[in-house]
Image 1 (cartoon, rainbow, N blue to C red):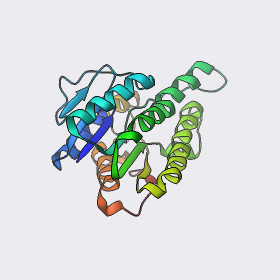
Image 2 (tube, rainbow, N blue to C red; image 1 turned 180 degrees about the vertical axis):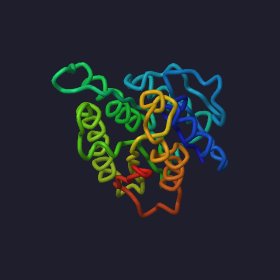
Image 3 (cartoon, helix red, strand yellow; image 1 turned 90 degrees about the horizontal axis):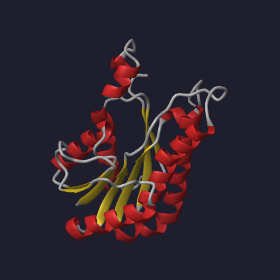
Image 4 (spheres, rainbow, N blue to C red; image 1 turned 90 degrees about the vertical axis):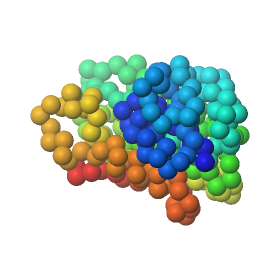
Length: 221
């Protein structure tokens, strides 16, 4: 089984790759960063800008040449910024749209011609998209876009046997989040392993009846 993971060199991407590789899958990692210390990737596509459709299409085509048709696409790549509307900038909204929605859209479009039968697409959304708190407007709006992309593509592909779902984490326990919130109770956060386990299920045949779902993975927040 061939699974492509975008953002595979990031904190969550590494956990997802490690877990899926442990099941014997061939993993292609795609990232703007390099893969020098990422374990579990059988084929790496580094220095790929996920907002550039030509780059992503070429990376997907090379991955298929190496590992065969795509059985799973996991869109982990994304980003976050805290900024109020009053003191913020339009550029932040544009940047988060590109990081969270546009990158997932381009990856999905590039993967579609190479999908195996009964393939599964899973994208990382956010629980915060349901209601934006202070400083979360741009982020919540972009992750709302991820949810709508998931639902629309799931409807389009229903007749082809391809499933499309999204995982909606709360605060993820990552080194960056711990540094940004040093006084927080991290025991309430969701771990990368917990998110990766849900992704593994959504990629599996056991989830054959699940498509168009937005699955909360909220830890104990």
